[in-house]
Image (tube, rainbow, N blue to C red; front, side):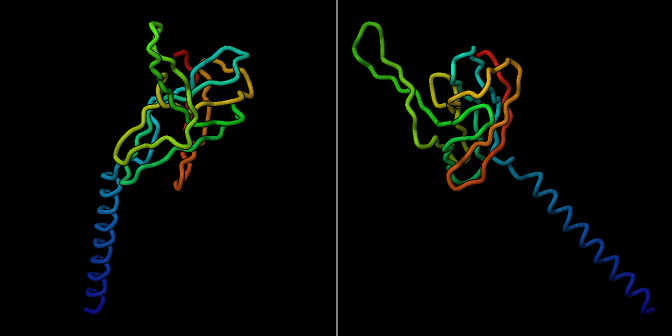
Length: 158
């Protein structure tokens, strides 16, 4: 009789453990994906041009704004966040467009930051080798107060 009670108790614990594991798995599957970069690419440029840009869309599913402060890669000596500014001069030739370095680019909580030509982007400065179309470049994106994000981006003509 005592053996049956022990066996029944053990089966109950097994069921409880299985139910707990199933609940944890369900919660993990329902959680949003972590910070990630969609449609990443590095713009192909001909040698000997020393700089290029990383484009894509950073998606932030967290409850906090994230601040992109730079990156590292073996393909460039430095990577800096940049934005494009347009200054209206009243000239018939149109506004003056310039790229300006910034301390950080903000990826809003539950939002996205588009890195694109003519807008915000990550500039890869001092390329260490000529770029070949189709090559995949690995970068470690750095964020203020958050873990780095490793991304892989193909070199494309855009």
